[in-house]
Length: 108
Image (cartoon, rainbow, N blue to C red; front, side, top):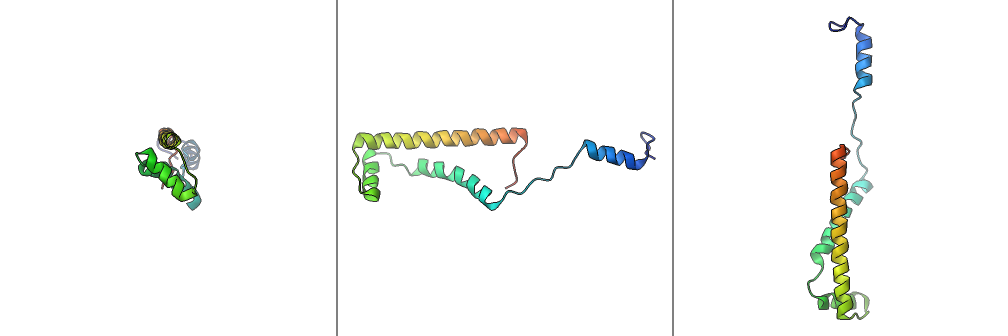
């Protein structure tokens, strides 16, 4: 018998177990963790490594691909890379914040 509610003890523990289930966090697989880390590292690396001058971008494209590029198009490519990196970082921050608020952040 339970001292608080005069019910049999087994029934009380069954009701408590049904009311408050214990959630065990699910471990993420290695590919999932690798993908999550890569999603953060790639835009940050691009943002860090993009040169400031369009001439350097044109030179890098020439050396890596063998294709020449005009300075205005190199400037546009630079601006596009920076913009896309910032957008991806903001999206990652928003999704991580949303998951944290909902309590669904997985352990590392």
